[in-house]
Amino acid sequence: MGKDKGQVMKRIKAIAKGRVQGVGYRAAVQSRLEALGVTGYVKNLPDGTVEIVVEGEQGDVERAMDESRKGSAMSSVTSMEMEEQNPSGEFAAFEISR
Image (cartoon, rainbow, N blue to C red; front, side):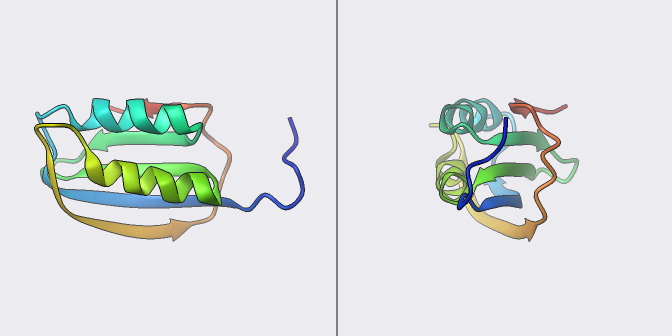
C-alpha cells in the first residue's frame, strides 16, 4: 500500500499530565484515535503521566492530539507536552501499550 503523493506524514510523541491514570483515559484515547485511522500507542508511565505516540497524515495527527486532550469523562488533562518526531511506519494500528 503506497501513500498518495502530497500526503504529509507526521509523528508526534506527547505526554499527557493531570488525572489520566485509572480513569479510563487510555481506553478513551484508543477508541477515538483508532476511529481517526492513525497508528501508534497510548501507555501509562511510572510518574503518573500517559505517553501517546501518533503517526498518520498531518491533519489526522493534529485531530488526534485534540481528541487526546479530551480524554474520558473521569479524566482531566492539565497539560500536554508534544514533540514532533520522524515518522517510522512501524505501527499497524493504534493500541494500548502496557
